[in-house]
Image (cartoon, rainbow, N blue to C red; front, side, top):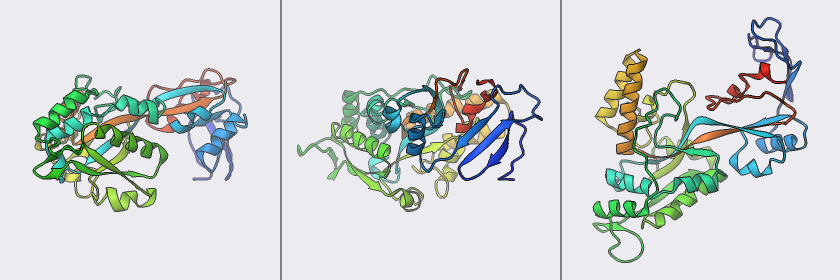
Length: 339
């Protein structure tokens, strides 16, 4: 079935091999017959090869263009959609440096996240303070937004007892310097973001040494065993239900995705109640409460959520891509109307 799949969409597979998938209109689809008489997906070894083929006009569309490659795009129309792929700095809450909520608030307030997005991601991300995507039915627009304010961040650290008592540029408290490792996988965009974060925190008197590790052992050697001080990582919400239980409930600390080790009774109660009820309005209210609590406690420092870039040749008309893509294939939801 993987090589001869059966479906009920507007197209069916006519031919499939290692180089391409050829699709033709499905005569058994009960919906509107596509204007296109053929749709061919070509497979490439990597994204840069696909983009090069698009620039040579060998293909008429290319998806998931990394921000670093956007300047290489030479023609076509570019469609952008938000993706529920969040990037954050997980703080190891077992580390005494991060156990004070005021310190976590200072670290986020001292980050110019708009500058991170603008410079490292070419503007192709959206700054967020919520683990729920902005136009979800459960999003809380009233949560506190942490804008960049260096003076406020410094005041928060001063109030928490972190001061530069010896004049070396690094804050200290009770004989301990405010320095730690910021771990990230060896991926160009992530490394660029991590280095910018470290430079910004230096202005706060906080030293974060960027620890770049190979992508292969990143999960097994650092993320899963919680072998980090702070770690730059992202997660994907793969469906329309924004339930954040897997990332933030205390039962997920040991073997789940609660990598910061956040154990909060109020958060647990809210997440459990939201799973028990089938009342959509009640669930939305509970998730709004959770976002308010998350923004207060900051178990992780949310940076931004992703943007999906889809380039299409200008000859292709009536392309409509939704404002949010839960999955990359969602860009094709209106393909029967393209011509």
